[in-house]
Image 1 (cartoon, helix red, strand yellow):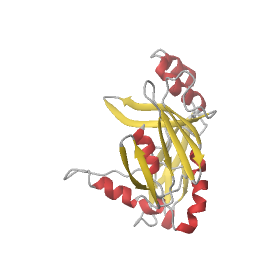
Image 2 (cartoon, one colour):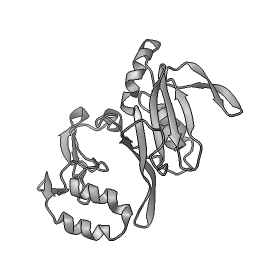
Image 3 (cartoon, one colour):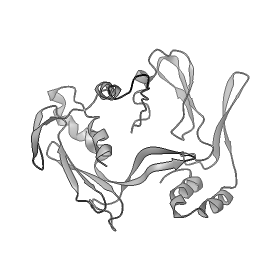
Image 4 (cartoon, one colour):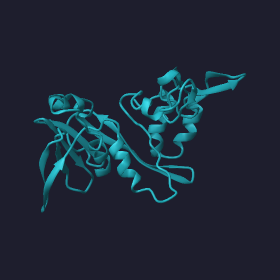
Length: 245
C-alpha cells in the first residue's frame, strides 16, 4: 500500500508559488476513502503485479470488518492527510503539502525534511525509474489518469497524420488525437467497460477500420464463471453490466 500512495505523491507539481492556493483543488479527485479491489491478478501462467483502488462510501479509515486494505485522503490545512490501513497492521498516516517548500518529516526515530511538488509531465519520475533499468532492459511508460487525454501529446510526440491503435482501457472509441492523428481503441471482447456488455472489437478491411459490437449469451458465460468460486464476483458484475459501477 505504501507503493500505491507513493505513486500518487510522486505525481505532485506546482508551477509557481502563486499557484499554491490552487493545490487544494488538485487534490479534490482523491479526497475520500479507497478500498483495494484487485491485487496481483493471475492471468494464464503469469501474474500482473498491480493493484487497483475503488472509491467507497463513508470516511471510516478502516473497512467495516477490517479485512480489506483501505486508503483515506482528507484535507489537512493546505494539503491532505493520507491514512492507510492494512489488516493486522497499525495504520500509516502521512500529511502531504505539495507546495514545493521544505516540511519537517518525522517517522518514528527518523527525522528529516521533504519537498513535495505536483509533477507537470512525469519527466523526473521517469528519469529516476530509468536508473533502475538493467543494461539492455526496457522502460515501459503507461498513463493511467483521471483525464483520458492527459499525456497524449507527449506520448505521441513525432507522430503526425497517422491512425494509431490503442488498448488496455477496455473502452471502445474513435476520436481525433494531437497533430492530425486518429486514435482508435477496438475495446474488449471479453470484458468491455463502457456500460455496454456486448463484445467490442474492430474489423480492418480494404484500408478501413470498422468498430463492431456483438451480442452473446452473457448469462451462460456467467453461470460457468461462478462455478470457479467467489473470487469471480467482480468479473461477473463486469460481464453483466459492462462496467465496474
